[in-house]
Length: 91
Figure 1 (cartoon, rainbow, N blue to C red):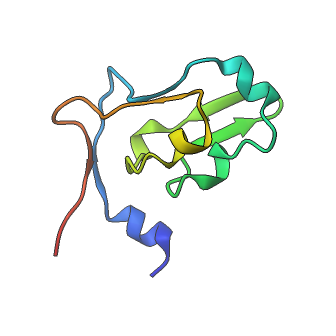
Figure 2: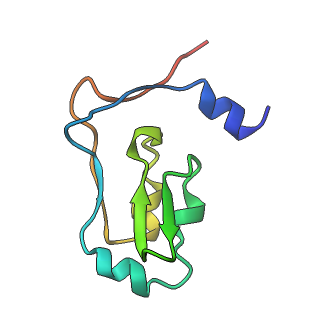
């Protein structure tokens, strides 16, 4: 089974009012070499638009693994508010 198929099985309770992901200094994304956040995230949450020079965050697909905060010190990551976020199934 491909990882994309497994990610499709995960449930999310999306917090429309408050994202648990952000960028503390968006200007650093313009200077970043290689933009590792765009390829280390298993859920593909981050993408960079070269024309707009802007990092986009699809926070509602986040699996809350925290990999992004290891590769970039400008990503602000915290747990979603209670009742929101990823919902894994067991069994």
